[in-house]
Image (cartoon, rainbow, N blue to C red):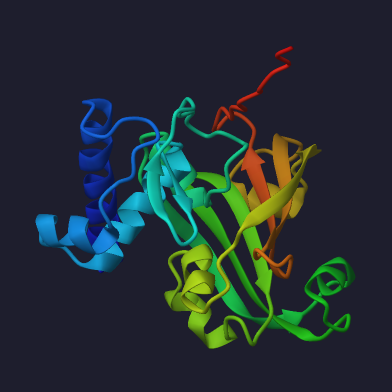
Length: 240
């Protein structure tokens, strides 16, 4: 069932993107509401919401709390590091089919650095999901996510397609994340999981995601095969 939902989400996003590019909605203009767009297209509101999330990740629209969704005026950059997106979205945005391998989940003792961020005792159980993400079958990212067990129960993780969506459904929508990027060479474990020679250059991204009130709800570590993606960053200014 996950495949058809993903395809519908992206096909709806492509339709809306085409309408924006055709000038149906101008920069700064408010889109019709999600229920209205869903009704016109005869799809569920959740499918339309997911499609709009894709457009937001692509930089075509922005959501304003309590107001609605508006067309943006800034460039839409694929894989823009200034935007927060999941690995599945990154892979799909690069024109490849996302998949998973070697997926494990459950409650594990919190590493000290994770415990400090999530405000739990070191060694306390935290919900953990680790998987290798694939792009058109190629292993490209090893991802580990940690969150509090009361936010997402360990036994719920196998059915989670997007941790961001799962947190949002529980009233814990991620408002922003702070990421640290550093180069790293693959050790034996990572080399085996990613199917690359030991010592292969990886890009490691450590990220803490927080809600609007600053509560840390997700800690992630991603090891990217360095030649798998090209990231971009929109740099504003300096102006006057």
